[in-house]
Image (cartoon, rainbow, N blue to C red; front, side, top):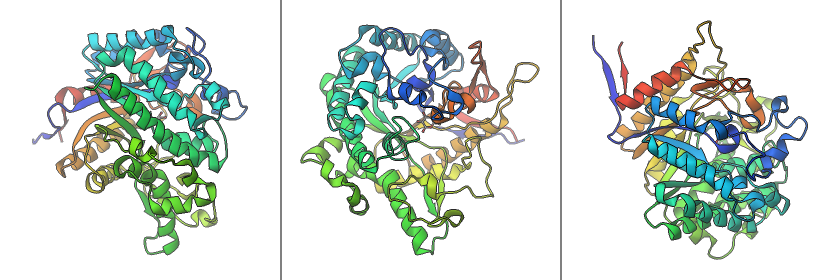
Length: 461
Ligand code: FCB
């Protein structure tokens, strides 16, 4: 019998991820004020089931137990986000009580030998700043840098890697164009302004972080996926793929790594006044070298100029979802997303081949499936386990091809508030009973724990 062993590089980081609004709960305590997500959840019909940030996984109160569980699982790192409305409520003065929570969390992680891996912005803009224009307003980028400086001053001595933003595409396009995420605006001009101001905020925050602590590493996390034309020979499909790839990927990657926006995207966005947002010097701030790039990967998109016979005359800013459709031949997760592990290899290779090389980390990957407790209170989430396994193999393929991939965080440690889908979609490797807040590691958690300990996938055929 031959045991198959796929070993990962030495010091490969194994972790799990969450985000503040999705897990913390305790939205009204210790001086926290509303974020755009608190407000958005109050709009009837905005979130499935009328769900909101309470109770989430009550992580604010149960973090010690959660850290112990991570240690039991053998995780090397915990990716969490810091809530801006706790640390600088309303985007204003520093709130010590809010900072204290993250001090306790970081200290507890370190006591358990787990590297704290914070993200400064995972979508919870203080509502007061939205009232002043939100990410469509240039000033928000400067407020973000102030908040980053506060966080680094308080925690910087214990953090080795900071992530400025999580998936700015979602903040800009889902929040300000499609209107299906907070703040729920459907204003294309605001969305394209938000793209630039999020990137500027990243650059200014990175400067502030480095000024406070020159030894730290700074990066950003982007959501990446291949965009594949349904008919590669059809000019219409090719153009849709180019346009969407421009809006999804290159509009972020090019300024970060090349110091310029892609010319075709600037032209596509001309009717929305994109270029007018960009001032002299901005691109220099945005393109200051970063120390790592986080990649969130879930699926790939198959796009057509006329999906299901609909016209593609849709505005150029419309998100990929409107023009993509699942093929019949691949399994779907509970989100309706195709399971496409080889797309992960492709995005990693693309970064490796087309952009200046920086260490890469998969900062999110995972899947929602319907989990049910069996009679022994166990959850045999075979689908999720095999999803993660196939993506780890795909990540390993990229490493073999030379990609400098240094870690993998599964999304998510805990079942949590899945944005507009509310609590109905479960991504956790640990089940959360929202009534009792009891945590139950699923089969995927046990399996992932073994992979982390072995630093390898070990399969006995
Ligand atoms: C990503 C988000 C994360 C989570 C997963 C499923 O886009 O960053 O918070 O909701 O999707």
